[in-house]
Amino acid sequence: MKEIARSTDPVRLSFLTALLADGGVTAILFDTHASIVQGSLGVLPQRLMVTDDEYDEAVAILKSAGEWHEPEQTGWL
Image (cartoon, rainbow, N blue to C red; front, top):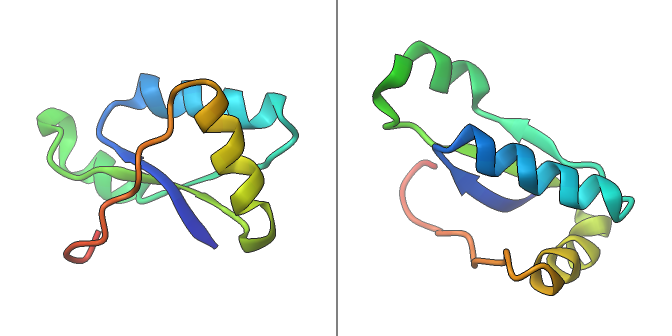
């Protein structure tokens, strides 16, 4: 699995998931339980993940929609 996006905004994550689904890519949301535990503080981002073999296709879909941002590679999240 590879991270395709990270956000504390559930609307954005839902939008990105829908974009990917329309392109035939299945995305899975990680860290939802950690995010729920912290409540509405918006501190812990959720990660949108895709399989390794769909990663390039997912990046292309998000780039074509103007929604691609290189995921951060810092810390635990």
